[in-house]
Length: 179
Image (cartoon, rainbow, N blue to C red; front, side):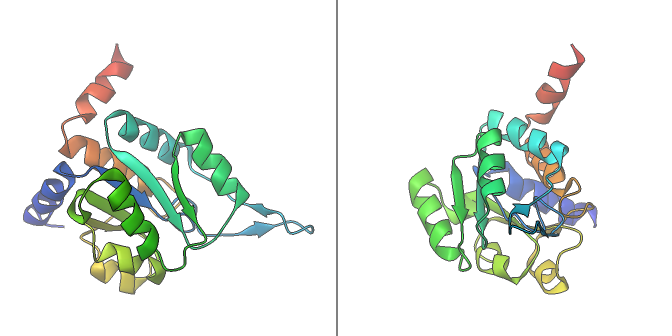
């Protein structure tokens, strides 16, 4: 990515008040595990989780909109302190519109991280559309930026760090760990 393009991404990130995340393929690597009783298991990246906590502490809200419903997602989001959790929304536009009203923000003040076609209706409406590295090629075409990491492997942390850096919060977060 050129310096000019990255400058534009940073400018978009400066104004963000909300980060919206997909789950399968973004917060996870997209694999679904089921036991013989039909219980579903997911694997979440600890660095992504810590990045979410740091981003929220810096004043940016975080929401999850997923096309599927999963008890493990509800539990993980509860552990991370995320209260804006929308599951079972194959058409994610309704949840997105509700979030904008609830948080009294514009679409330009939101970012969305996605990996598949279900994410496009939000990605084309937000101020910063991000695709994870292993996203569907059609999704990458509509992203302002693509992470270097894949879904479930630190891509969300990469986005959180970028937003904190753009908004001038990253150095304070880093320095707090160095003291």
